[in-house]
Image 1 (cartoon, rainbow over the protein chains, first blue to last red):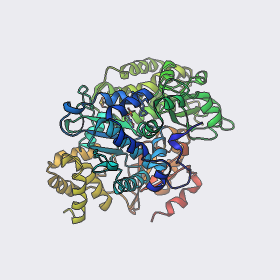
Image 2: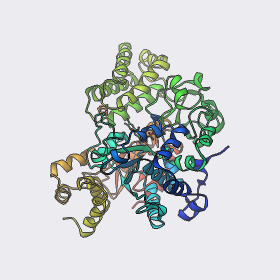
Image 3: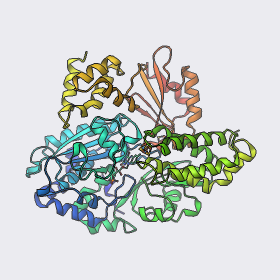
Image 4: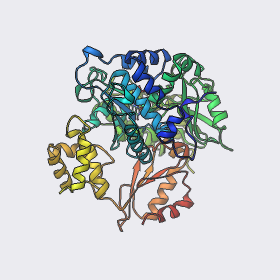
Length: 425
Length: 154
Ligand SMILES: Cc1cc2nc3c(=O)[nH]c(=O)nc-3n(C[C@H](O)[C@H](O)[C@H](O)COP(=O)(O)O)c2cc1C
Ligand code: SF4
Ligand code: FES
């Protein structure tokens, strides 16, 4: 089984410096692209590879780039912003890629930039990732020193500047348009779409936002071709995926596996099953803003289309495992408290709805709930769902709430009947 | 007053963007890295330096949780309170920390040694429970280790 994304990543060892990275074939794809490929060819190859964005929404990467004005139509600078904000609770995959192989990210970002003919690329890194910051800073400097960034990259006519931007917190900073505001030195409130960032992003100029894992795939696609990439996967969506598991499993961690690996294989094989004495109750497949799945869903293939068909979303692909010693109401409350704290307060349904939901969940968990509260929570989940708010934070909050009410109804009702949390001692 | 070094560092950041304002967040980080926090006086100085109004800069500062607009202790402890750490028992750990330090969430110890803050998922959920002290990530924390961990931060 091929694992291109983690080939250079050795646990407990320092990541390759530019010499080691180049020795392992690094920056060959960038050289090939800037010297021998037209930007449109890079985009077409990535389209053919069927690379879905790994930031959570699964938007086709090549298609996103194709909305950027090219050639004569393009006036003024263009930008790439790499989303390294990784704040979705339960997600820990971009950290692995940045700490394990920073040059792979830089080469990938440079390839995305070349495809849209960007002048500047920013890596938007969350403040708490101090080790990633140190490693990326050094790697960017090495890349400049050896001509992989800057004026006339690798002897070509293409020039690119790359900067590391250290964020100052808040989940909204990872939302595509919130991030644009954050880079411009404003509050990370979302912007109205359209216009889409690909046409009018940073300072009104065309900008592509891509996730870390998305662009880390690019050197391998350029080196080995679209067919090779599609064949890495078990399903129609190309490539491998960095999956992960947290919670009471025997071996929590991250694994690079073929896209479409069944959920059961993740839980039972790679994560080693549940810890002694714990039973599986539920799974959040891809970060806090994806719907719960249950043990009945273990055969779902973990790609964007299949998880959606099962009623949830692949999201970031790092699963959170709920065990039978943990209270589903308490877990839902923890998730909704997160969304409430991070809501920017712009839309009433989001902020007001979340505040009310947290209040009701707190009451139920504390033993003061009433059966009507469950209907109210159902309608709050419907109100937070897509279509009522300015950005995707509220719909994200609706996913665990609505699905918890559906799959763990009996547990909610037991709290209310017994006027206490059955899990509290 | 901004120091010469601070101004130089901010200028480097400002050169990376199309506008001076874009360096606002970097500028506050640069000041915070040196002084621990961003005082009212620092906001005034930075606003002038970046051609922004102080109110505008302050509204940016107050949006972001990693910009400290109040004085913090010599060391900042950020305890992850998100879902995987919740599943792995961060709550008893947090309660023990509060008892050991005699300071609650959002507070600073009387001797000014530690400030205790909650933080969103630190992206190390497979090693929960997790906390960040200054720039060091502590993972798989066992209650029995807390004292040894804290001892390293004087
Ligand atoms: C509230 C919110 C937070 C988000 N945070 C992140 C994040 O931390 N990292 C990320 O890559 N995408 C995040 N996204 C998704 C981005 O908006 C965007 O879709 C993504 O970065 C695009 O990259 P991709 O097409 O390569 O997946 C977030 C979305 C929302 C609504
Ligand atoms: S949905 Fe929530 S986070 Fe998004 S803009 Fe509205 S209030 Fe802000
Ligand atoms: S939930 Fe604590 S590190 Fe992710």
